[in-house]
Length: 237
Image (cartoon, rainbow, N blue to C red; front, side):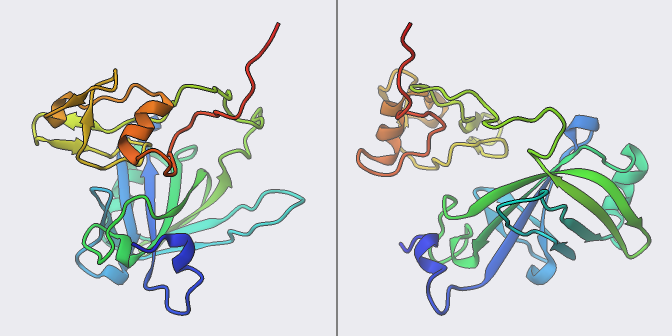
């Protein structure tokens, strides 16, 4: 298995893939997953989530060390009526969150090196305003998630011993895990209860949110995908 960090430094890294997640639940809608239409009629699946092929352009994303944050633009095809129907029902989608994840085709679920942990991002934005709407495309201007009034850094409390990432959920209707809202990257088949005890069936799998729970799943000595800050010193009175 070649990591993404190593792959991007090679002369032939593979087919570059951008995956998008548009969350309209804040205004009563649903979460849409889509990708560039280079996949034609059949979209990719990554981390158990299917992404619908759509003509999409994402531009204006730049990195700098000073000045204002970039205001990228996203343009999506409007010819299939999907985005038009959402706009007709919920308005211009102002304030809705859109995320971009970047990876390579070999890491997709049907790829030669399938691995949902190999990606860059997510780059998280809010829809700031609608720039254009016509029968061909819809275009929005985005703002960085931290470029909001009252936002401060760090954006969350630094907790030493507890991970706050959302863990995968078992869906009894399908008999499989639901990763649609998961933030933890674990997709393995070793199951443990919240006390760290091995369990035989996936429906009993729960994370205890400690570093020891990460080590059980990812392996001691390996990178641990936790939101905890083990290097933070304890507060002393």
